[in-house]
Length: 302
Image (cartoon, rainbow, N blue to C red; front, side):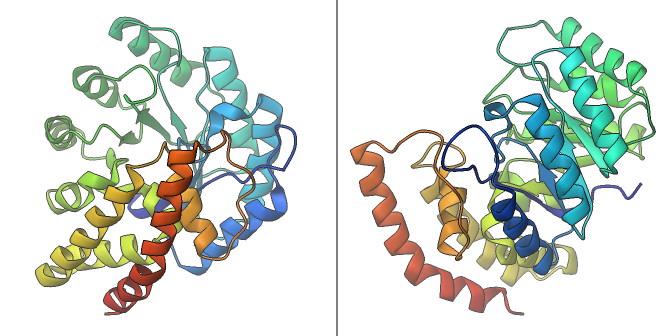
């Protein structure tokens, strides 16, 4: 299996106008768009993909179709509130040819680090099939995998790496120390605000929500970092921080979804209606983006 390296896009999941299903015609458009931009791969049903809104059967259906459609490696988030649900999703992802799995700590209820550690170990033990498993740390939305727990799990050799969305430099430093002991693991950034710093000091790549709407920015920034183009790196990092500043006006992943829409793709309805204040802010964002985006494209063409 190809390891996660470079820039992977965290894909949005366009919903139908009614019900709790994904509109596969629109999902295919997103997949085709990202493949055309030559991203390193994609992640399905992460936080950007709003997996929490969809049932097990829908997640299985979409994963099967998406893997067939994608021309780049596709990771599937199989996180669930319990172990049996995660294993069911994982075995389906294995059978349909996913390139790897992502797994959060079980969500909603609070668990100790001892229970979280046991959850991951039992998952790896019970999973049938040979496929890379990536820990998925998203402390903003669910139980945190604390750095010590993450390093213990990565040191077992049962996990291919970790996507860390904490945005914490001390967490990244702990993971990079563990990588020195376990060179086979991949340290993947999941918080775009830390991308430039993290990639520059040894992170293997990113699974990026920003990349779903602005693949040119993340791919260009990654190219500047790995080729040592400090001037272009700083220029594009400033653009990234400017864009993230706008994203922070909205709940995740509304800003990314609206960016995809501004690129000409249909995204389906939002999960929650806008308040009048959010609607006004979104109008300001759209107006800003219209003038900003052509300048960005010019800067990424190097």
